[in-house]
Length: 354
Image (cartoon, rainbow, N blue to C red; front, side, top):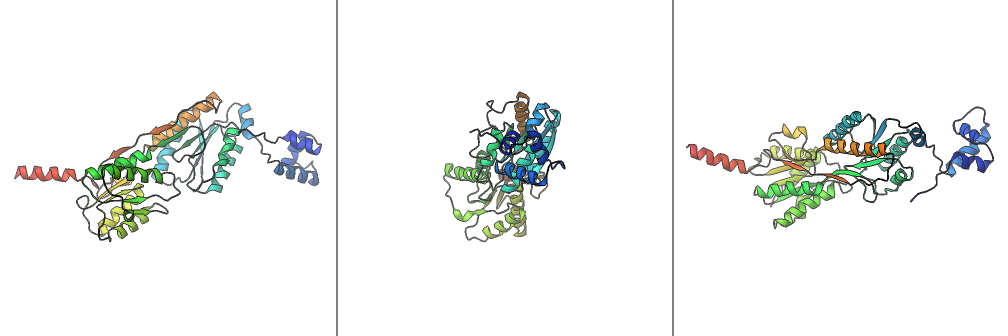
């Protein structure tokens, strides 16, 4: 729904002064009296006036800058997405400015306003895990600012989105463990607020149901931070159960690496006794002992696709053109942490040699 935004003219007419006077007062010009400045600033606040630097930049054609708002920069997956964004933006003739929300709603709101006030040509947004009220994104359509959501996308905001098929990835990971003949598959689940956690949990449950495996709540551990320490601690707890798990599907590679560390500490053989699968296919997983089976999300391609879609919107100067969501299909990379079948093949080969 469109809302008329307060303008300099509205403020000027309300106070019976010129638009130039209002403009100078808002810029703290010394020629304007303190009393009048206070009146103008107060009324601007009451009317929710915000300088439209974006519109100004459009009058000058384009700023050549794209804003990116992302929950966390430090994660491997985030860094691969940013690599795709930065590389493709440069190829398309854009510079990139990045803001980290730290999964905090207020920081996300502030980042959004700062991007808009900086006159960016468009904005890429991965939504904070703690964003329940998404109405602050409505301003993007109201101001006709090109935008694309990526990875963590809103539930109730229309517009172009680029993401991984998380549910399918989780299904593939769990199905792989079932086909390797693991019977009790635990799940290290992402935090409840995470927008990726629920579809991955649902994919895990769907695979169990398809193959007739019972769902055991004892085998589910929900993270707060989804890091290596939680993976380690949860694995130590679960392996103390009388009917302990013989496999782990983890919401990300960080928790999976923690699980591997715990199993090594307990001197449990992988993959003979227990199998482990992660999600995001980090480089670190390649060099673990054993190497980590994981789901590839193709972060670089997510960033590349998001920029290509945004660039198209900017060049068409129209945020209302129809664009389909881009959902990238995940892929399982099988490595030593879960591949039991190769052990049987090696045994047959050795016995034939004997």
